[in-house]
Length: 397
Image (tube, rainbow, N blue to C red; front, side):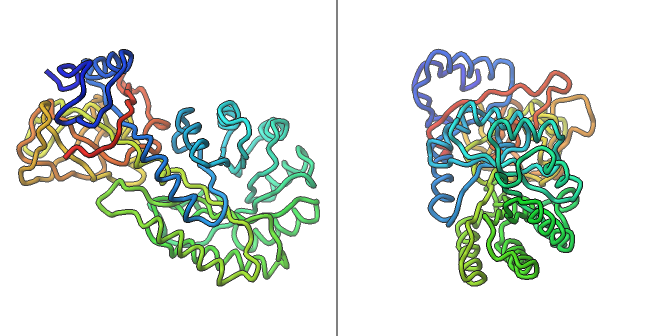
């Protein structure tokens, strides 16, 4: 019998020994998830608070949560309670979500492409900060808002190899285009800010350093010596692979670079999403079948909470436990991991090192899966249901 159902109503032992006493509703949800073989996301609020504290303590500026990374009302409220009073939003739905749960939060509408209707609704809802990266969008904004009451973050891009994928392929003006945007926005009466995004899952400060140098040069060449802020975007790493995140060192390097470049350092804003929420969640999947020595099937895959692995690469900070809570510690072998759907492309992008003594009904745990796992999950083939359960910590060993 799975550990979830054999330990109902009592202090969990073995594999989930750190679960608190569950109330009746949580017991019922756990039992149902186990019975129906649904994946389970374990959420540790204390780890979320700790990561928020890291950014608030080490970043000399405003920390804004990129809402898209995990648009859960519970996450939004807990980050607000932890001290994050600013949010990056990318749609009217996200604006309404944050304002409903945190009415006093400061919002920055930083999706550079918006319809006139979206701009007008956002402005009516009190949004006074927008990003822009092309003249056509600047013209839209001019028609829908009052420029003297509005700050435009001019978003530019560089040709850098950073992160797991290139944000510049979709957003960001060239340096020359950014100069024209700054000139025209100033002429139209807008307040000016500068913005960039280095990519995602960047574990070195070098991209931020290069972008900050370019931002400084852009200000010098346009004569824009005073900006409302420089938004350095997100891109900070999470602990999803065996490489430990160097977040504190990155933030220290950013601070040093700003102090070196600017006589009067401008206000800074950063927009962590993944780095704030990913490490507060671990995903428990169940091994459904082992049809060969190097293939196994899970009850979750790329159409479920593992969908983002196709974009940012494999998450290999994993553990395997038997249903009775014994950690599998045999020597490992590379195995191809398939999801539960009937689609043959439902396979993780790289093999994982799995202990040889695994068996069906074992639990394969992926750590650091709190970002984009729920927001990009589908219901393809009738799969994709998951349960979120609060825990004290993830010390299973």
